[in-house]
Length: 89
Length: 417
Ligand SMILES: Cc1cc2nc3c(=O)[nH]c(=O)nc-3n(C[C@H](O)[C@H](O)[C@H](O)COP(=O)(O)OP(=O)(O)OC[C@H]3O[C@@H](n4cnc5c(N)ncnc54)[C@H](O)[C@@H]3O)c2cc1C
Ligand SMILES: [Zn+2]
Image (cartoon, rainbow over all chains, first blue to last red; front, side, top):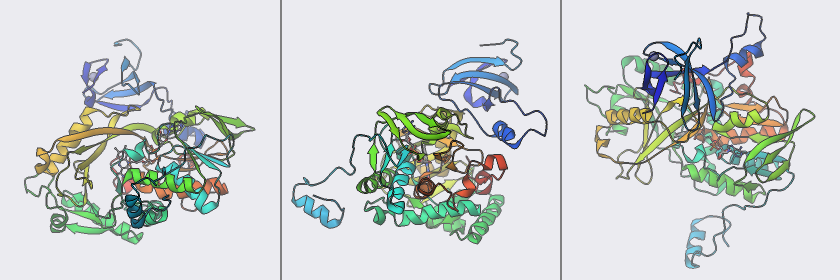
């Protein structure tokens, strides 16, 4: 069992967390954004091998946060609350 | 020297001290230029090369594999072959694959050990029985063989299941496909490689594609760990590594890579001669010809390129297995492994020319592309040879993510992942 760090609750079992998507994937502004811009936002992913920056949710406290980790070794490098206001691990 | 495999060649080679067997495929040095190049020596890549040569007469072809052929998901999968999907588009593609599988050993002169032992999707409640009936009706309308099984039918094909009334997931019945079954995964890769090689295809192992050559807005070749190779038609079938490779061409795909695990028990006497899948526990099971119980389940929950698998998922799969088959509690697990699968939001494959002209995609098979290998090969070969979609591959083009015409088999046929 791997431990992930929730910036609010500390180290918890990986099963308490849910993957939310790649960090920095911004929703298009306004309904008149072209279809391929929506497709990019909704479906297209970088899906990198190695260093990743992702949004995760800790399902127990319900907080979303950014986790930096390695998608090959699964080593976690940092967990930061979404407002970036600290609590970093 | 043996070129064709047969009972007679076995006897002849036996009498001659087994000295006449040839390597099943040639391993030539890569040429500088080919008519077509296929990246990825899994089942889909090898089948593509074979059908290019056999159906389209394009024989100046190379398959470039970074490791050894079949060393990706093709050699790691749990080998279930079936075609009971929901949407007509899916039925067309998986049905084509299933029919080709039925003639494959003969076509390739290589025994892929297709065993049509049947498969039952269990239903664990009256609600699931109703959904099961809807699924069966939809499949029959699409011309797929599917049958509703009562609990007695299930007991007949898999008496070792837990039928106790107080079971956590009691068996109410199931959806049966009699033509479903298993095939030998390595044999599918090796059989296509051997047949393609005999038609002139170069199978090049230990050759990693590291970049694409782009000239005049078209893909004109690849850089590899064994030098530059030029070609105007490139097919890519690299499964879980599709995003990594397409990034080199400046493309993004609707794919997340995850580990999918499987494991096998020690070999035991025959006890289960069909494939059983339980959507309730998320576990599916069959028994290999060697006697091992082959166990598969849900995807890992952490996006990953680590070909290992995480413990919580394995734990969930094993507890589901023991709930379904209490008798298996005595078994020892022999091996556990994982493959990196290419998961797409609508659980359907991506086949077609990429936004970079000259580069064609065959990916997104996720957790279920072994059964589709003959179709994936046929369709990518058609695209590479003609530059155009086959009617069957058209709905699976990447453009569906812009038009919104998704083929959601997760919702349609209840693929858990
Ligand atoms: C545990 C598990 C169980 C499964 N069970 C089933 C099942 O029961 N039924 C079913 O239908 N499907 C199943 N699948 C899915 C199935 O295995 C895959 O969908 C299918 O094998 C994909 O075939 P492929 O040829 O596209 O990919 P692969 O067999 O993975 O081949 C891709 C190849 O590309 C090579 N490659 C990658 N990058 C490069 C590069 N840069 N240069 C050169 N080569 C490269 C890799 O080394 C690899 O050999 C399962 C998968 C797993 C992991
Ligand atoms: Zn928390």
